[in-house]
Image (cartoon, rainbow, N blue to C red; front, side, top):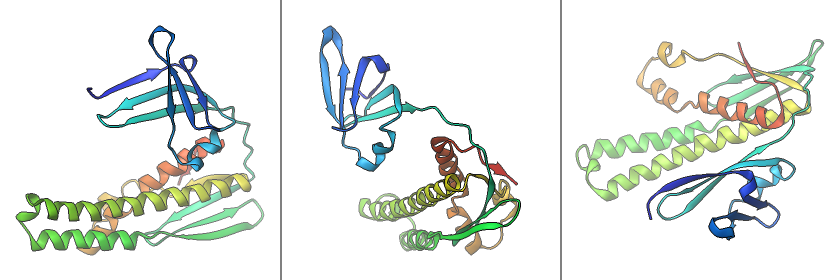
Length: 224
């Protein structure tokens, strides 16, 4: 069976999130029941949302399902500003209204762990300058460190963004971040700094924050 992707209208399937079941209508009035294996925390927050179009993909061995959810967002009246300062080791937030500072908090950003795995990759490539491209065991060792880097960066960005958006929703804050668009162009220095800069997932963090804002009905964040 070849790889394929299908879009299914909301009227052609039934979704039961409580029992993690998906029933899809196929030809001749038949129905196919699919068991969803996503973690409960991934879908429990969409229990009261309306489901729309569904995308089903077969990659040759497994089926992947993407469901579009929608809900009405209430008008958001901001009462304060949540400012974000992104650094290599930490992310600091400051919530302030017109009168005083309401809250300040610092989140640790474990990019030093990711940097260690990056250094290990470079050591392996330096030790086997030609062999690492062709020997399966060496390539797998490099991929292993690469996966750990990705998990550290993406996981920390997702966790920090989730806490930030929850805090902004609690204090009815408008999120403001510094504009670091040209940092990679203007910030090139020594080799060590450039290694840190390559792992600094500023754009990925912004993506998760914007995603959380859309999900919770917070107005789009602003850049200073």
